Image (spheres, rainbow, N blue to C red):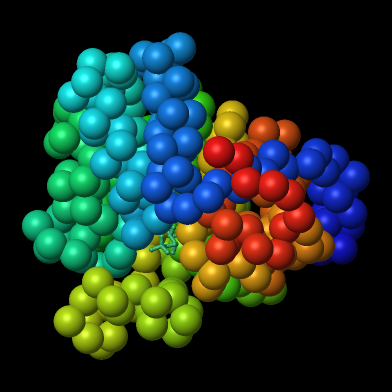
Amino acid sequence: MKNLLLEFLCGRVIPIKIVILRDYESLSRQAAMLVAKTVRSNPAAVLGLATGSTPLGLYRDLTEMVQQGFVKFGRVTTFNLDEYYPITRENPQSYYQFMQRHFWEPAGISAARAHSLKGDSDDAAEECLHYEQRIRQAGGIDLQVLGIGINGHIGFNEPGERLQAETHLVSLSGETIAANSRFFEKAADVPGMALTMGVGTIMKARRILLLASGGHKAAAIRETVRGPLTTAVPASLLQAHPRVTVMVDREAGRYLAGRCAP
Ligand code: F6R
């Protein structure tokens, strides 16, 4: 069954557009340009957003573009990819607070338009269903921004035998807990679970922009772009999406042939 699905997907593979930038600064600038252009051509766009270190430069540059009057985010709707579970929205380590600090507030996106999964919901399954509904009601995601884990995860869809299509509760892998412990005092403080959009939710976005920076992401990027489609590298399934751009800096793109864009 699994092989049939992969064969079906492989038959539809469209080459991913790869953009290799000199460094993290150029990567952030190019990514910000792409997001800003999307919003300038559709001020009511629905954006899917990621947290983590990678998009920090993107959010900083977008905020600068807002301050310079190049783009306005007042009419966009946003949906975040994921949130730790359990965690309250007041917790400074929550992705809710991250987004508030780094993007929603400086870019002028009101609470009513900025959606994220509630990490303190009593009923995780209900929260996930409701999130899918809200994305549908908003008309689906126009542009989904993604980072990637060193293990190839997107959102918190961890490598494994199976992946879930829709938003769901997931246990974080030891690798992910170790990688994310840098944001916490100690690894034991990292919540062991998370709510995340599923791979199907991500694949329904009309356009996807995946960002990666640094040599520690190079192998995951190579497998995402050149490897087989496999649940062992969740990001590899993006090869079956018709409109994906992978933007990397030189280090993250070191196993991909190609010249750097300026
Ligand atoms: C964050 C998310 C994760 C991160 C990934 C990379 O919302 O969904 O998949 O994008 O773990 O994290 P950084 O950018 O910190 O290396």
